[in-house]
Length: 166
Image (cartoon, rainbow, N blue to C red):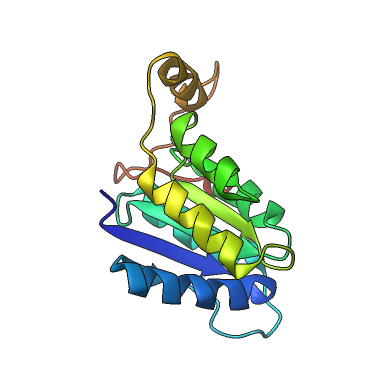
């Protein structure tokens, strides 16, 4: 069961994020809003990184991100070790991202995805468990350290993102 969700967006995803906050409140799901807090132009990596880091460190159980296309926030989130961010366009892709990929961050295109579609997608995403089985080894391969790569831990033992070590 999801205990706390981190949410974030840039200016282009702000309105979708505000609708998501209303949905989470209606469903009784606790959340932390990592910004942005207006439609003023801003940089999506700043907010996507905050949400991804919170999920990676266990401060939030899952994350929800929005930008204009959903592509930018998904790229940034997937740079953080332990994050499996999925750009979803409908309830079916949201369900499959949980069932087959054990996604822990869902991303939406604020400019092209309707609020009802986002709500239906979130319902599927929260309600669908990871299937495991044949999908488990695939997810494990995502998290494997590649040859020559460090596991990205700092001196404090915290997971670091790719950008923080390069």
